[in-house]
Length: 379
Ligand SMILES: Cc1ncc(COP(=O)(O)O)c(C=O)c1O
Image (cartoon, rainbow, N blue to C red):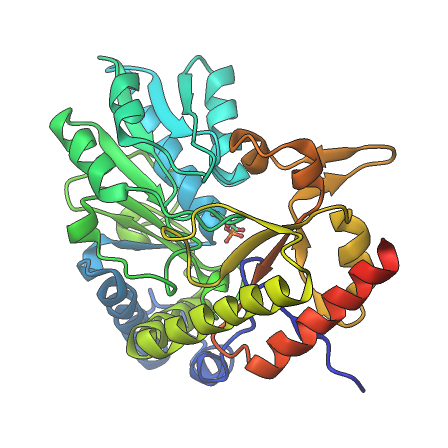
C-alpha cells in the first residue's frame, strides 16, 4: 500500500512511540486513582508529580504553576473566563487580537454577550500585532490581555515579551495561547514575562484531549469547574493519569531533542519553499513573516489554483489543509488571512503546509512533485 504523506502537523501530531510506551501501564496495571492512599494510587500520584515537573521544565516554570486540562481549548477558556470573572468588579474590558484561534475568539464573543467589551487589535500584512497598538487599547477597566504566541495558520510569532512588559506596567494579567509554539520554538515563561500560558498536548506528539495551563504564582483566576479538590481545587475531576503521563513524557522529549526537531522542521520547510519556487516559476505567494515564523509552518498561495480543489485532488497522496472554508456556493476566507488584508483571490488559493520532526527530504521532494502535477492538471 502506498504511504500517504502527512504535512499537516499544525492540525495534530501522531503520538510518539516512547510516549505511548510510557502511558500504557497507567491504562492497565497502574490504574489507581491518584487520590487513593494505597500502592497503585500512589503510583499514579507519583507519575503525575513527575509529569508536572516535565511540563514545568520545558517552559521554565515551577511544577506548582502547572494545571492539567483537557487541551488547548479548555486552557484558553480557563485563562480568559477565570481572569474575567475574578476581576469583574474591577472592570470588564479585555484586549486580544484579530487573528486568535476560535478557542480564544469564541470565549471573547461569549463574554461580550455577558457585558464585557473586547478590543480586537488588528495585525499587519505579515500577521504581526504591534505592541504599541496593544498599549493604546488599554483602559482603566482592562483586566486581561490575551495574545497568541504563534499563529496556527500562518505561523507568525508575536512580540510576547514586549507586550508582557506593557501588561505588567499597567498591572494587567497577560495570557498567551502557546498551543502551536510549545515544542517548536523556545518557551521560557520567565523570559517572556507571561502570567498564563496555554499548552495543547496533541500539537507536540502527546494524545488529543490533554493539555496544561501555566498559572504564574499569585495570579488570580476563577475556576471553570467545581467539584472535589484535585489540581489544588483549581481544576477538579479525577485526573486523566495516562494522558498526563503522556504529556509529561512528550514535554521531556521536546526538551531533550529540541535542536534536532526544530532543525528538521526548518530544513524540510526551507527545502519545500525552494522546490516549489523552482517548480512553479515563482507563481507562488507566501503569507506571513519570513523571519518571525514557526520553523514548520508555510502558508502559501498557488496563484490561480483554487486551494480546495488542490487539497482534495491530492488527498489520496498528500495531506495538507486550506486557509478557507468551502460552503455550498461560496468560499469563506479564513479570518486570519482577512485580518492580514490578503486579497480574496490569494486567500482562496492558500494552503497551509506544516512539517513535523520526522518529515524527510524524500517526502518533501515527492510532495512538491504531487503539488506540481496537480496544479498543471487543474489549470
Ligand atoms: C493556536 C491554537 N489554540 C488552541 C487550539 C485548541 O487546542 P485543542 O485542540 O487542544 O483544544 C489550537 C488547535 O488547533 C490552536 O492551534
